[in-house]
Image (tube, rainbow, N blue to C red; front, side, top):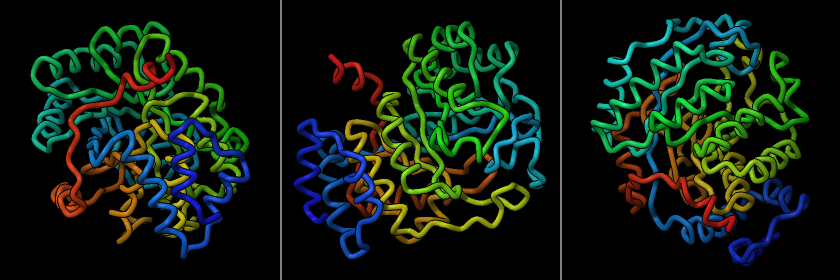
Amino acid sequence: MCAWKELAQKVIDGYELGNEEALDVLNSPDDEILELLQGAYVIRKHYYGNRVKLNMIINTKSGLCPENCGYCSQSSISTAPIEKYRMMDKEEILKGAEKANQLKVGTYCIVASGRGPSNKEVDQVVSAVKEIKEKYDLKVCACLGILKFDQAKKLKEAGVDRYNHNINTSENHHGSITTSHTYQDRVNTLETIKEHGISPCSGVIVGMRESKQDVVDMAKSLRVIDADSIPVNFLHAIVGTPLEGTDELSPRYCLKVLCLMRYINPTKEIRISGGREVNLRSLQPLGLYAANSIFVGDYLTTAGQKSSADHKMLQDLGFEIDHGVQVGLRKILCK
């Protein structure tokens, strides 16, 4: 298929890609990559113009996780030499928010390892979020694992705007990545936070020995889940994890994945996330013709590129920083 721009206009008009059309995106010839990106950009520009959302992560609790996720250096089965520590105190979380504000970040992401937070940990996050909201014009996203109903209520009342809980992979491939929780456990947490009026953020990790059909299934599942924000991670295989040595991705394939996410989830925030530096490499700028959001700074246990380089990249592209977060678009479009 080469009429990507025409397909993009159909998507804007409400058309949903079928399974074969979605696979066509991932299987498109490399010499069509610019046409494919042009189509994705038509959709992206329609909903987001030339604006790019900046996000920053703070890893408030590192390692010590009982789960057995094969990609994660913080899991119980990982031997990766990472720093391990209990939940940060409020002052450290506030220092991170100050840095995010200085970097012109729109969304500050408070992340903690583990299956799910204790009530004490939730209370620590709640206390920090209340003060962040008083001091800074930042949106706050929390990512604390599987969440209980009353914990979600506390986070909402504190002012948490968004909650991240990635599906990570397809339902079919999930058992090959982790057995310590189910795919449905993740979906249930997303439904819980939606019930409390918190914007759902859920994404994927590509490059974990999944099939192209799995990637299509991920994109379509996120459409059904109705995630407002979709972080697309590209596996950065860490020594000491079960996926150590896995190297399946090329920069061109990564671009096709980003285009697929845009064609299937046209109205959503698509974020180029972990692993972009090592997988997209010199093609990173092209990814923003499909995506409209990036992380700046470091990730959980791996380093990102310098924030100054990210700001320069946006400037060179002619894009502008968007300080807002699209939390209401899902509700507007569903009316």
